Every structure is written in C-alpha cells, then in structure tokens.
Image (cartoon, rainbow over all chains, first blue to last red; front, side, top):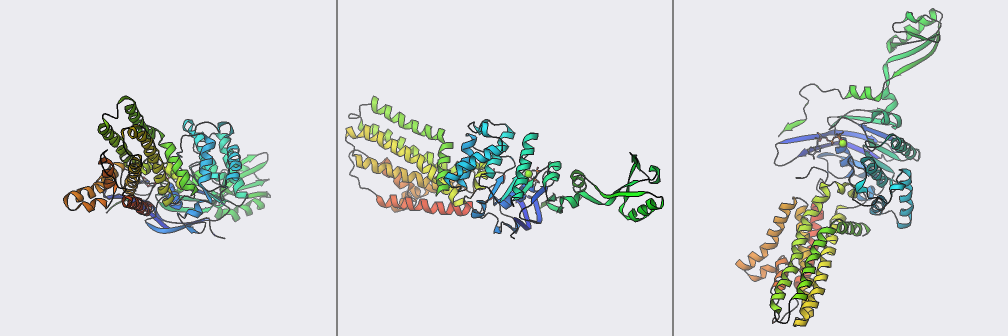
Length: 308
Length: 236
Ligand SMILES: Nc1ncnc2c1ncn2[C@@H]1O[C@H](COP(=O)(O)OP(=O)(O)OP(=O)(O)O)[C@@H](O)[C@H]1O
Ligand SMILES: [Mg+2]
C-alpha cells in the first residue's frame, strides 16, 4: 500500500536575501506515515512541526529533499482534494459557519447534492448545529477551531493533517474529536496530528514521532515508546515486603521494581522463599516523561542559526 | 472552473466595501447630471465624466496589488489552498473577481454617461466603446499589479505596476507614438481622455484585443511565479 505521507531527507531553511542569518527549521526529516494509522507528531515549540506540515501541504517548497502525499509529490492539486487540513491558528472568513463549511466543500469539488448532506453531517459531528447560522467572525477560539475541523472533514478525506487541532477545545469537545479521529482510523483513514497535549496523543496515536530543533529524535509505536525496557514491576504473593528494596505490601500482595537485568535472579529468589509470582510488567512511562527525556536541552554548540 | 468562480465571488464579497466606495463615484456623477445643464456646459461635464471613469483603473491596480497580500496576512489563504485549488486557479479567481468589480463600475459609469451625455449630443456608441476601453485597461492594469504582487509587497507592487504601465507613455513621448501600444493601458486611457464632442472617432479594436491578450499573458506569468512562492512564510 502507498504510504499516506513520506518525507525523504526534507530540509527547510528560512532565509531572506537582506538578512545574513538563515534558520534551519527542518533538517533532513525522513519519516513515513502508513495508511490507516493515527500518527502523533510531537516536539517542543519551534521544533519544526508546522514547517513540516506546510511543506507536505505544498504551501512551501523544501530547500532540499522531497516528499510524497498519498503517493504524489507534495503540493499536487488533485491529491489535496482527498485530504483534510486544519491550520495551527485557523483563520476563516467572517460569515455564517454553515456557509463557510459549504464554501470549503465546494472548493474541494464535493458535488452539490452531496455537499448539503456532508455539511449537516460535519456540523452535527462537531456540535455546531446551533451555531450554524452565526457569523464565525464572532466565534470564540474553540468554536472557530471546531469550524476549522468541520471544513477539514467536509470532503470525507482519506488523510487528515491537523496542526494542534484541540488546543482551544473544551474537555467535552476534546473527547468528541478524539472519538472522531479514532472512528476515522477504524474506517481505514489516516490521521496525522501535531499536538502538545501529550496525554491525548498517548490515548489515540498508534505511532508517534518526536522532533527537536528540526531533527527527528525518535519515531516508533506509542506502546513501545512508553514501555521502559530498563525497569520491571513484579507482583508476588507469599513473601515479606522487605525482601526487595522499595517493596510495598497491599492486601497480601507485594509489588516491587527492579532493573530488567535482575529479573531472573529476583524471580528465582521469590520462588526459593516459597513465594508465588503473579505478574511481571514493564514499567510504563508517560509520554510526557519520554518527551522530556528526548527533548532535554542540547549541549552548547548545537545552535541551529547559522551565518552564511 | 467551479474553483475559479468561488474564489472570484469570495473576493468580491470580501472587497464589498471598497467596491461600494468605487460605486459612490457613479453616484457623484449622476448628481452632476441632475444639477448641471449639460447642453450648455457639455465639454466640462465630459471632462469630469472621463476623470471619474479613469478611477476604475486606479482601483484595479489597488485591488490587484493587495489581494494576495491580504489573504496571506490574515492566513486565510491557507485553508483555501489546502483544498483542491491550483495556484493558477487562485490567481484566475482573483483576476475574475477584480474583473467583475470593474465591469460593474464600467457598466454603471456607461449607463450614467448615456443618461447625462446623450442629450448633449455625445454618440452613445462611442461612449460604450470608451467604457470597453476602460474595462480592458483596468483588467490589464490589475493583471500587471497581480503579477508584481506575487513577489512584492503591495506598495512595491503598486509602484512597479505604475512604472511598467507608464513606460509605454514615456517611450511614446520620447521615441515614437507606436510605443504607446506596447502595454496598452495608457493608450486605452488616452482614447478615453482625449474623447470630445467634436471628435470623429474610430474603434481601436486592435488595442482592446491586445489588452485582453496581454492580460492573459500576465495571468500565465503570475501563476508561474506564484506557484513557486512559499505562501506560508511571514510576509513583509
Ligand atoms: N517564516 C519564517 N521565517 C523564519 N523563521 C521561521 C518562519 N516560520 C518558522 N520559523 C522558524 O522555524 C522554526 C520552526 O518553526 P515551526 O513553526 O515549524 O515550529 P513548531 O514545531 O510548529 O512550533 P510550535 O509548537 O510553537 O507550533 C522556528 O525556529 C521558527 O522560529
Ligand atoms: Mg506549530
């Protein structure tokens, strides 16, 4: 199957002819997003997420490297008809929400009769029915973001590219969007989402990539990233809690953590003492912990602003 | 085609206030028609009429030089170009929107002109041909301005457009009158500005066709440049 998105050594430098400095926003990004997955795109402020997304959408051209979206080069007009996009700070025209969504649907060549139905559907899905006739120019940030999502979904896209889609949403709307995105995945569609809301990404994404200072620092299955191979949590019955350092007893069950190298020795010790092993689990870290480790400040000298 | 139409309508809708201001001039013209006795001061009225008509070109340059910039500055261009819209369609949409606005103006001016000037003996066919010249001059001026606005900010785009549109006039004055036809905005406006009651007129269809053709060329060039531009970067 054709990957939904493919970055191949993509580099983007922002430079201006009258300024001696150039900013390398993206530095040799190579990344493949498979069809049918929810892909979390993470990174601290200024990491280059928006830059990568804009390159994929064809708003900009890479300084070096190339990329494919649904098998076609970035910026292909026909391909864009099959995708949905929500910008980071969504800016829309000042007119009734329903009219806006219809406008964007028509731009994407959704045929007339189908369009009316789709508009109703997405407005319903995003809880915008009561706001349909109100001017989006007077919407709160969260409502605007919902209209932005509605226009991204109007063409029933195969791939959605969302730049911080839930940053302004209230908790209820966040749950709604989360469900919407998992539903899309269940229908075989691809979701590429950049976000700072790590707990949310942790909940829905199949894979994540972490970007730092324009470079890809980690990509992998969310579950694998969260499992730490260094530590294990062992649950046993029938031994005293002070046998292992840090052991805790609760309802006759003892839990303790050990390094993975000591697993065998620890288990044998439990059996020798006549204990019973109930479970051995890798300690799960939160995505936040992983993120903080991966994006810890780089040592001096890793500055990205270069002079010509 | 659907995309071009949508973008054109959207442009007109977004620019409705400037367009309304433009139409106010037609209102001023018609007031003059009521107040002044055209039969006695025909040439004076014609002079004012010609000046008001020529504002259409200024507005076209203004619209052309700022359209892309406005959309980029407000970031609204991103949601539009994230759809199945080509850059050439986008530029075509803007040009069609501007064309619609100036057509509306030229039509209103032509109707007012017919009402005011016909009783004083100005040939109606001449008047409507002049309005066609105005329209074509405006479209070409807008197309040149749009072309510059794909890589310059509105101020520089406006200045460059004025320079380029004025160059044939300078060349005509210095070298040979034929040079005026090169980029015929000036030549078309000259037809309008030199019109008088006593003049024997001929329709310069060559200039009209050339203006139309060059507008198309500008569209091609503007699309080519614009499709190579990063639209998401900060603008200056
Ligand atoms: N138009 C521009 N001109 C110059 N530098 C830019 C421009 N746009 C972005 N940058 C720089 O490129 C880098 C990456 O920016 P980008 O917007 O891609 O980050 P991001 O990961 O989306 O950040 P955030 O999480 O804050 O949205 C930053 O250092 C930023 O300052
Ligand atoms: Mg960003």
